[in-house]
Image (tube, rainbow, N blue to C red):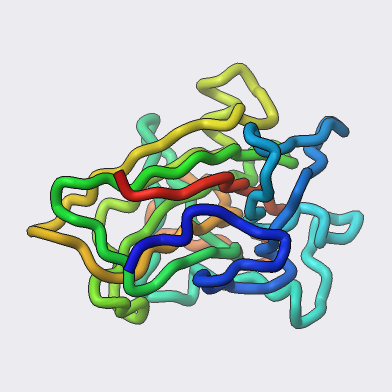
Length: 219
């Protein structure tokens, strides 16, 4: 099976989501600076996580449709160690996935995205791509994850900008032969810490950012 190639205002046919409120199809999206983002081809795109589904303190609104996926309670998630030695623990987040995907050994997974931040450090929202062979999402994903972007990158490596432009990304999976299984894009709000043995309280992972995906293909 292939990945659905685009998104429609009618919904996310062929995809699975962590929450219908945190993951949704958009025709435009307002960023932290008040401007609007649109698809480079004028089509719909999917938004993963919802920075505006929070109260004035940055905490997620307590309704069932706004429930974030808790990463610290999952056995299949590992924290990210940054090049400078600091560590980000994944806390609560949202995901979009497609199951029963076949990616031939000589092909790459291609997608076009924009990553947005709505808060500053020490909160470190990040987006990553995970692969689960044979659709077994209860097991650990293939490692390492494909890191897409994070707030720390934008602040420290890109001059403090609030968002990327639309960016093309290609991922060749380190797998023996063809890959068949689940592909999951995940956005997590984490907290940078210096003690690699510490997992901060999960209530600190409230203020989200988001990942916009405009198109997906296998090339």
